Amino acid sequence: MTTLKEMRNSAPQFDRKPSWIKVRPPGGKNYNDIKDMLKGLNLATVCQEAHCPNMEECWGGGTATFMLMGDTCTRACKFCAVKTGNPEGILDIDEPQKVGNAISKMKLDYVVLTSVDRDDLADFGSEHFAKTIRTIKMGNPKMIIEVLTPDFGGRKELVEHLLKSKPDVFAHNIEVVKRLTHPIRDRRASYETSINVLKMAKDFNPKQYTKTSVMLGLGESMSEVIETMKDLRQVGCDVITFGQYLAPSSKHAPVMEYISPEIFKDLETKAMEMGFLYCASGPLVRSSYRAGEFFIKGIIEKNRLNERTNHPTL
Image 1: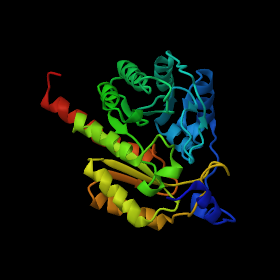
Image 2 (image 1 turned 30 degrees about the vertical axis):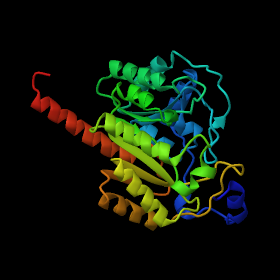
Image 3 (image 1 turned 90 degrees about the horizontal axis):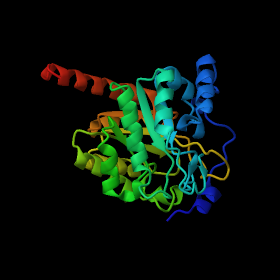
């Protein structure tokens, strides 16, 4: 098994990032207004916490990813910029309403709800997710809601409890190929658990859209990536995204390779050939990505229109 120490010892020394990785820092009036509003409501977005390179594009385009249950994660994955610690059961019970208020002020039409891992909570935060979804839908029934969840300890009843609140998209990230799960992800996570969580969602509701994301550039082989895609299709995963891993600091796992845009394009083609409904694949693509959400939004709105047409009394 590859260790983090071995990865660091063998990591290539890059003088600079390739041209296709460079992005300008976020800015502009809309970005700054939203940033100030979120700070005033004491809300966190994964856009900020994870240093997402697409923040300005998404915030200006009607989508944002809110990070529920605080900014401190109980797990310590070696790829993640979010801080690690023990929240000791503390939970802001007013957060669902705060998120609903923020969404109305941001004029969003597609919201992604994610969270830190909360292994300190008896239900791993499943009810907090469900309450937030219910609150948003009560205020705006047309809002499209995607949840990007932790693994809830692999407990089927917690996954199903969240799904009863009817999110439009259920996402859970596999993150890396099987061989790299450890040392990259926290020891409490596993490749098999992540696959099973996505399967649980489809088993509960075969019409539920499911989604996952894979980081590249950590030393995986293309054959391992293809094998991961096959495993995901076996459990009916609908949408997959591929993006370049970028180390948040020298303490995190090192970048082993910068993947070319051509390889990302090849993976997108392969994913569609394998039966995924959609694949967003590129160096700066992240699990919550405007292009992918725009595609999903189109499918969901079409389905809603068909339901109204077929049931005119509703």
